[in-house]
Image 1: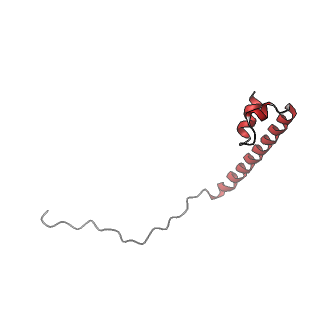
Image 2: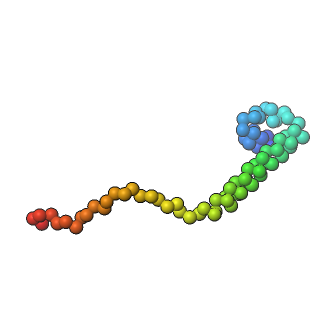
Image 3: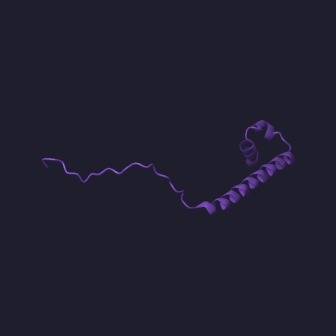
Length: 79
């Protein structure tokens, strides 16, 4: 039963419950193997991307606008 669930869930709409339930076991195993291979390839690509992004772990320099700072040192008359 878990094979049926896995194929319906991870099949991304490609299989209905009845299709998978009535599917021969060899076909089920074939599709499960293909889905597993696909997920493994995705995970490898994610790991490669993570390793490549570690070289740019420094924070980017932010260019601030050229706005003069307010001067709050002036005293209010009568205070």
